[in-house]
Image (cartoon, rainbow, N blue to C red; front, top):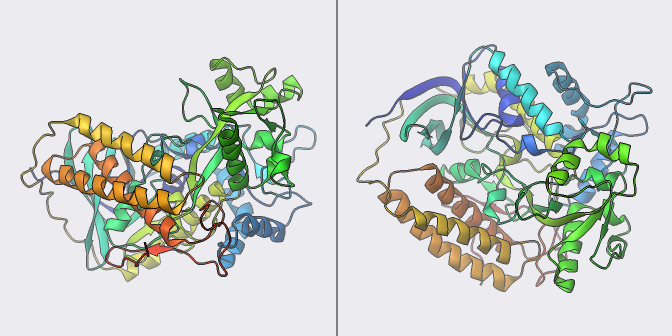
Length: 530
């Protein structure tokens, strides 16, 4: 069966802040197809509680924000990129405000209510209480529904990009409703699929975060950089029934403290900034406390603050914790670290261009060099917005440079049959995620990475056999993608023979003399010593 073909000037894969904002900026003059494998609002953006970091306050400066970003990035940030994105912050706030996002203001003077988070030297985080991302996502979704020239395809998942002579002309896409693989032809394809958190057993990310864009870009020949730099957020709610619920860093910005099961505050033992130290330091500190004591979690306590303040400032967290049987105004919250954000990704410039013609990557899917080895809190929505607007501004010039579209040949399933043992797929899903949690987590070692490499290699070959023998399903495609992403993380972790930012290898605990990006490209595989 040939499957349908859908044509547009631009194909956007992903429906978080990056994909929606980009689409809105180009839709007046260009046709856009957006595909999203869940509903349009199912994204990491929706879960962003903290806010967007930008220089607004009178006592702040671009130089200060740049310095904080580079310091937390542990020497791996690209300084020119950092300066450009930070300087664009006020423009982004105005853009989102114009679209209808209502950031919180102080009732006394009508100035923005700025939050403080770990790694920041100033209050500069604009927020909508503790559900900033959810409000941004809902606002942009409403604007997209009203926009001309945008068609959204929910429950559609990218299978592979269609590449000819190092140029992308669209993608093969699984219609999960019908089970058919369709052709989406475009002159420009934009990857905005978010992060990779579901590669790990414990994560703050939604179920859709399986690294699809990174895996597709790698198969298409794009360069992938710094995938070993996975940030573990220090404070995920520890609960048997409520999973993947983040407790924002803004709680610690407002004075919340971390305690062990003995009731002792432990962060001052690890860093002068205590709970407001960079995320990699706080996550490793908690990990160390858990290993020392054998406990399942630590406690995050803000109950000593005024009850009205807690409920007003953190309503979503207050309600979710009540659902879990925890009154945060009266008792501490059980928390553990969890995979949260990947600083690496598809190598892209500040305008989203990759090294494959016609292919752009924006948001968490991309690596511009902004975050370096460890992301500064609330810098992600900033970078995502800037790269989306920059990429939109490049569209006309890019279309002039590229030739006309070509017809994508029909999808050929070959001799593939309906899968007969789906339980094998679910078992491999679980095995990869446990493997990554146990061997490629917060603290790594060379032996653990070698074990992980050997096992993931075997699993990847088995998954490859499944992919070619059976008709594609969403579960199988996601499994294939997390295996690819896991291989990339492990390979680059073995390449980096130092500890820097979010990557800590106890066999190489020091910094190398020079900070360099790790890079892998299909067909260009660096030799790694045993």
